[in-house]
Each structure stands twice: as structure tokens, then as C-alpha cells.
Image 1 (cartoon, rainbow, N blue to C red):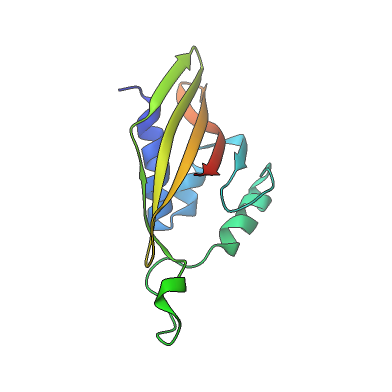
Image 2 (image 1 turned 180 degrees about the horizontal axis):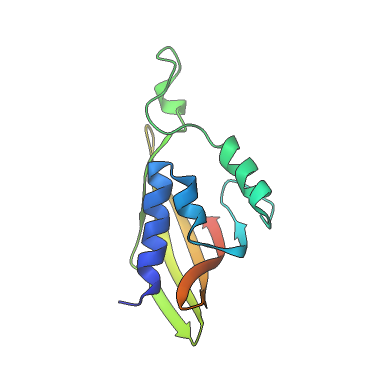
Length: 132
């Protein structure tokens, strides 16, 4: 498999651990993101932090009296089998991301990730997510 897929799966592993620094280490400094949780194109780390801060906490609902079915906490993300194309120092991976929640049905997110090889290392340059 291509050398870009381990970069993408490492990003999701870091995301699942809540390791923002681990995710950021895999992002190109000029990375842009269409996140499924935000209608705006993210073009800066400050914008990315704002989207991250707006997400519900992971894990079980903190208020036991709340309706469990409305708990939006993510409990897992699993990227599906990718289709990867590479052209020199550019690569594109297309795949479906499954997002599991503490309660309710999983969400499927059609995802395209663009990577650039920078000083011999693949970095994520753009992510486009679209909920199916």
C-alpha cells in the first residue's frame, strides 16, 4: 500500500486519542479543511481550533439524566478502504470514514485527502469531508 495511507490512518488514530498535537504534526502548515462539522473552509490553525472546541466531548454522556439517544459523543472513527493516486510529490486518497457515536446510528462521511511530499515526508495538505 502507498506510503500516504499510514499518514492518514495516523491522523485518525491521533484524533481518536484526542491528541491535537499528533494530528497537527501530520498537517502541512498551509493545510485547508472542509470539515463535516463546519460549513466554512478552514484555512488557519485558529479556525481549526475553533471547530475542534465546538465538538462535543468524546465518551459517555456526562449527564445521566439526559436523553441517551441525543448524546452526540463520538466513540470511534474508522476510515474505509482507500483509492489512492500519486503524481510525484502529490497524492489523493478517497475513502469513506465511519463515525460511531455513543448512541444512535453511525455517520458515513465521504472523504478526500490531498497530501504533499515536503522534504521527503508526506503531509496532509487538504481534507474534504461530506456526510452521506
